[in-house]
Amino acid sequence: MTTFESLGLQEPILKGITDLGFVSPTPIQEQAIPVLLTGDRDFVGLAQTGTGKTAAFGLPLLQQLDLKINKPQGLILCPTRELCLQITNDLKNFSKYLGEVNIVAVYGGSSIVQQLRELKRGVHIVVATPGRLLDIIDRGAVNFDNVRYAVLDEADEMLNMGFQEDINNILSNTPESKTTWLFSATMPQEVRRIAKKYMEDPFELTVGTKNSGNANIEHEYYVVRPRDKYAALKRIVDYNPDIFGIIFTRTKIESQEIAESLIKDGYNADALHGDLTQQQRDKVMKRFREKALQVLVATDVAARGIDVDNVTHVINYDLPDDVENYTHRSGRTGRAGKSGVSIAVISSRDTGKIRQIERVIGKKFVKAEVPDGFAVCEKQLFGLVHKVHNVTVNEEQIEPYLERIYEEFSTMTKEELIKRFASLEFNQFLEYYQDAPDLNMKEDRRFGEEGRDRRGSGKYTRLFINLGSVDDFNRGDMLRYLCDNTGVRGNKIGRIDLKGVYSFFEVENDELEKVTQSFKKVEYNGRAVRIEMSQDGDKRGGGGGRFNGNNRSEGGPRKKTWSSGGPRSGEKREFSGGGKPPFKRKY
Image (cartoon, rainbow, N blue to C red; front, side):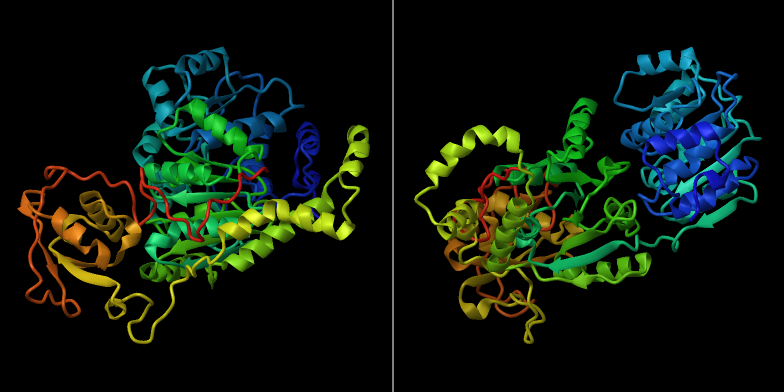
């Protein structure tokens, strides 16, 4: 077995990582450290998130320092403040026995005055996010003439976030003679161009396959109707009672709304997005690291750099626009050799994107079924039973209460006590999931998918509207627009077929009059919105009547707040199983 000692690391560093519980190097560490310890060659390392890249470049960098020179010798650039703080903390732990190693974290959202003060006192390694570091360089507050090593960590993430020009400006302030180490999970063309511009004949190391997913992660997807996504999300969480996960959304508003909805429904959840202050972000992350939160709802940008062990599930409430971002999302679980599950909750139109992701990560998704109410109740019951079976009893603390406890239960048999105990919380799940509907999108031989044409049931009327994708609508936007202008709840609107300059939508018959009356004299961007009855397929048909109405936004720009038919702010939510929400969970 390869050891850290055999890699050529010095005794003080070995002592530091032993204190941290490091036993043997990960594959990226085993192969990168000997190369980087030579200190004379540019390096490109490709490995997934959670494989130990920080130690792979951090340990050799610390060993190369000349502590007598109290000036920046190492510069590490990373995409987010969370990752910046994490790297800084790791380096300080690694260097515990090296002597006085000065490492300064430079990032936005915190006092620049304090950071300038720390830099002025002297520093060996600067760990920074690009934006804040440029501010400090512009002030002339740091001199990088002595930088011997520049490290670009999560390089693909930095480029995805639009930092390419900032990186160019920063590296132009460092000596040409420096050695550059680049670490990335994927290798898009932009990263390749950075490597070509700032490196000379780099040593390239790939652990796993380029752009591939972690082998320890299982990938699943669930196909549901857009309006059922939130109900499906809750059911998936309930089906995994020990879940400790991250739910990814596209927008800040969406992440906040989903988190608030989950909290109202009894889940230990919170949101992490760009509108939070640094203090709020730190508070949320502290709760998540301490597992005071069951799930964290986050945007891609906010979640970059999150390094939390033992995340069991990643749930994609919306698939990312950039397929490669899926690799980063799923990489939040299955870290340090542990297993994890990455889940996508999609509508039928997103199955093509699943195939694209499969090609990128080199792994197949498993099409899973949203569990029914019986399966969820069974899983919760036995989850409770296992917790009781495995709980640690503090004999000393509970001893004074045992006599009263035994007396309270003295009239019950063992069987009756077990049944009552199991029913105490289980009954609430039974009530909630009683008659719970099937949320899975089913295939229909006549129309391709369940619900594609429901006119035969007599429940829905199909309407034409002269707005479509050319008006910058997607299905979620159209659902929101219809609800906002009519006051009709989303679950009363059926299938939406979005076309170019027009669309079709279904509305329950008992809401038809309300919809038609609401759209009298409506305008959108200066033109009348027209609604007609649809009599056959995509043909508008005659005799349907035309309805117009006032546009509440007065033709101004729409603020997109929800996509794919998710929950809407200010609306009382329809639960999937009837009854009250599940109980307030205690984790």
